[in-house]
Image (tube, rainbow, N blue to C red; front, side, top):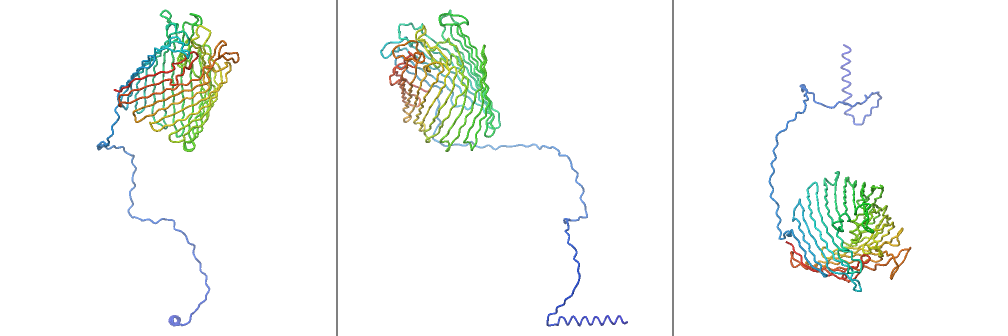
Length: 577
């Protein structure tokens, strides 16, 4: 009972106190001390998720089944595009003929046949003939031995152009008859100084076009030649030059970004016979046989860098020279550096090269047709040829090249005549070692197809090992060519040659003969040869031409005792059909 009354009393006191607090006008500040503990916070790591009372059944994994649905593709046809133009393709004619005649009775005729427009096939043929029945005199009007000649040739060729390869082939026949007229005696019979060269040549080439990058490409070319000289008589058929020459070249190359890796493999065979070996027909005519095989291998790499301005090619040549009595192996350097400056306006270059040149009766007679065909053949060895210079463009129409080179050459073929012997009107071949320094410059100008001019000047310095001079070779040479198209009606062509510093070996003293190191020689003078040609086009199919040769009328000696015609005029017509 007492406790219950105390409860009521405390409740009444508390209410009175609270009401007094809310009714108090002044602030009431209570100060007290207490001890409270705060529990440390923690992070709930579990992610929120929905708790479903129904659980999904586990999905079983099955292997992938291959099932191809038949698909049919239908291409819509697109109409060919049409281009409206008033211009037409220029009509091509399969035949072209050129016929003319010149002074000193010089008939000339040429006829060509070629395929017209075709994407995959090219083929054609041609026949050419030029002959002369005139005589040649010196400045004192003294006639030389009969100098008539005739040149006839025929060619058949074809080519297949496919997407992945090209295949080409050709066959050529040449018949060149002339006389050894290098003696002032017009009473000599023609047959006693007559000579005739016949050449049968066939070639084939295969080129694989498998792509420019990351593809191995190949090129193979084979060439066969049969060369024969005139037989002395029906009973002496063996006493003439007979030569079989095979030249096989192949290249493999692989392009990878800015590099090209290549390898050249080649084989050259030359079989030359004259007369019967170990036999003598007459003085100076002994049987000769020469069998020579050359194997070439040249690996290398070509690259460009510095934004394609610097181009570098480095390789090496390994050549085996095989003879019946002696075999040799040579190692040749091959390197070239070019750097394009000012957007290809100025390109300096420097390089080194070398090689082995195979001398043949065919190649020697191509240089000098008056050479005797019973010759000892020695290959020309060029251990190194260092060259350098710079080329570029002066404008969009004019370009130039200035360069110099230094080469060491062994067994250089030089032509000489036995001025006192039986064959004084025929040339022999002697071989010598020399150092050759060459300085040259060229300049060309072209204004579209209207005007074209180019010139080339070379200075040669010969340091001979045995001979006093480099016989019949020039010390200075200048060549110039030009063509001008006037309204597509008149076509004018000009070419000129200037050569000085040539000397010929002789074997006795005389007027104008000099002596050096125990050898006699004479100067061959200066060659000035200017030729001018004019063609008038009456229509696109018919034209007339006039050719003036040796306009300066110089009776210069291209070879010792072999002057040329002082002036020649030839005219004729051409036709397309």
